[in-house]
Amino acid sequence: MAPAPLIVVSGPSGVGKSTVVAAALAQDSSVWLSVSATTRAPREGEKDGVNYFFVSTEHFESMIEAGEFLEWAEFAGNRYGTPRGPVQERRSAGIPVILEIELQGARQVRLSDPTARLVFLAPPSWEVLEARLTGRGTESPESVQARLDAARLELAAQGEFDDVVVNADVLESARALLDFLHG
Ligand code: 5GP
Image (cartoon, rainbow, N blue to C red):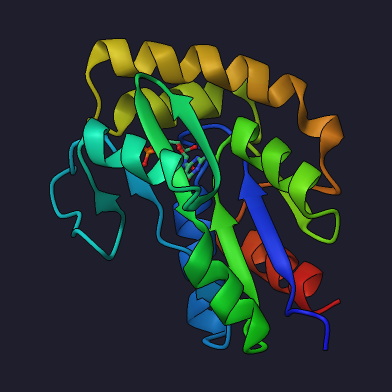
């Protein structure tokens, strides 16, 4: 039996990926969102094993060496990666999986699994993205700048994706995601 679908949700930091994916999961509990490992420090309210597995750089490197990542990338000064095992287990059990990752990771998934569907979440405008990123208040000015720099590159690459959803309305974007997943 073919594994259940894999949907990659990508797009610049601050575009609202987490909010849209959370809204999609609230509408459809049959879908599983992968939990990434990261070397970034937890933000206030983030929980280990829920939002991310927060690991040391050494631990992250040992996971790379052990081939434990489906994909991984460095982003705005930290590393992020998708543990391979849990994704494979869910998909083999017929459970569709969502990855919420940045551009370099999305490209790696595209290469390793051509059946994955890549969705790019775009902001309604550059100004909206900038306002969301700076207004979030969770990042240092350096991190905001690194994320804005990355955003320019990510926006320029949206043509590589199977679908582009402009995130003007969270519920509509979530519905579009679920349509891709089930369509
Ligand atoms: P944040 O620090 O804001 O949580 O995440 C920064 C960026 O890393 C976001 O674009 C987020 O989607 C992405 N990201 C989160 N987990 C992963 C992962 O496992 N792999 C990759 N490549 N990117 C990730």
